[in-house]
Length: 397
Ligand code: AMP
Image (cartoon, rainbow, N blue to C red; front, top):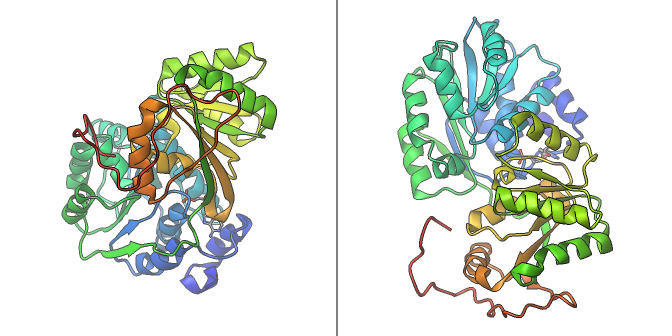
């Protein structure tokens, strides 16, 4: 089905065409007509499926002819778990609304709130915000919610994981009762369903079953001892000369150390983590997206929501211990039908995490040993029916 059949107006269709989109993705085809009818939805869709446009386009369609918004008011509120995702989603809003007379703003913590307040004074049609900063602004009476017509919870599962439930409830309580609610989540867990129950009304449920929009990712892993990882990484970088790679590592300190180890071997990389200032993080992301930076060594903070087109390679220097994090990390590559590559370094200690990940994927990840780096501590054989012998220490996998 072409975009023109989805009931979107000419200026929106033009903006989509300028993005190079030729046809809607599965989630867009299903969600857009329902949202355009003003219904609530709960949708299971991961990043990389085109989910952002699936809620932004109908919002634009709904707001395009609305009268000018009043001072300190907003019409659509999109809540996201992280600043990076807020920035990303708002950039999408701007791209898709460039032929419309609508305003948008990304609001998040960790930066001076004055420019955000100043932008609000004029009124903003579409606000993309993280929950903490939004509540803070509300308390300061820098924003009023009486004109909100549409609420979007993006990556609801992630927001719950990050402990935003109380903030979300506080925000929802303050919104007008008459509104449209859209909830997007990579997985629809029990907790997400509970949240949906309290917020949505007669929601249509959308799940994308077809594989067509699923990223095609060539995943494999390299068994390696922990103390050999940085030598292995440098060897692979020098050997393969990957055009770009996003490298995930567990800790801030680990990121800084790896960057300096690489530097000693003549490889330039940058560390991206919550210990760096917001301005530096934004600059690094911009440079990385523009292709000016070849290697970004990042902690989990970059794992979700960041949309880097055609990212060449995701490398898990440390395997995440949450299976969902693995899925989101590798989702940075192979987006919207493009193919991508994801390599993970796996040590003996990671076996348990590996089992959870392979169980979640429903498939065993191909292992490739690299000559000279074969581990001394062997990793047991994968088993999709593996069950932990002891209960997990923490968290959900
Ligand atoms: P998202 O899942 O919203 O993060 O989108 C993932 C990527 O898919 C982004 O780079 C979008 O620009 C791109 N995208 C979204 N919709 C389409 C479409 N219909 N055709 C091609 N690419 C798209």
